Image 1 (cartoon, one colour):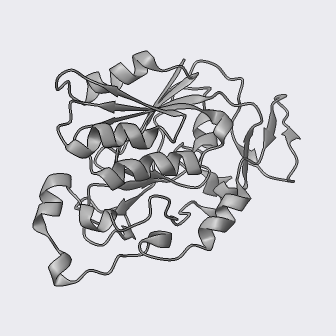
Image 2 (cartoon, helix red, strand yellow):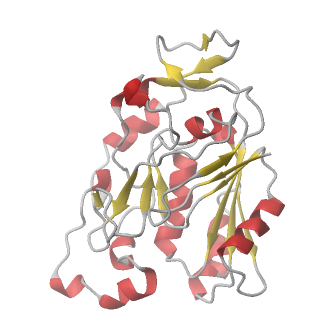
Length: 271
């Protein structure tokens, strides 16, 4: 089993524990058809171009990572104290919103193994905002090849917010790959992650924060790297606390990261 841990911008290191070399690294694209590498691994372009086209045509609040306009009356302090970011803004942005593709251009040309392992996505949370949690789940499902997602496991670390009880259970019924586990007392992040890991069925375990958004083609590079032990570099954009704008990484803006698909140390710009 492989372990991938991706954290938010306050923890900038992602760890991958990898057991074999059968899936192969990414290589530059020469054509659209799968290609056979010198190592005998067939690689293909995993991009969903129809989804990319749909996202590019979207407009509205927060679409394309643009800021949400706020009046002085909208700047409610309580929104920050409870969530660390403005949940008022988050609630007014689509759960399926588009995000800017922040990869280096060379990374968009990479091919990855035609046969990749599937993964269980584990998302621990405690008293997370409704829209930020759901947007995390939607972004993962929207921007991942379905055959690579074995399941999404939400692990509730003893939340006491009403919207995370029956309402969450009822909402997730419509997403068959999603299931919810709950602790019987506060366990903390590590034990909550371990609870999800123990229940996982996928070949790879991937941990995500409960307030992040997956970017274009984020998953194949991770699974295609499932051949070596690495501490990948992560490029992150940050969800600005007030406006929902995807600003450059700033240590003062600590929540709602957008995961760049270039989460592994391929150094694409040098290849």
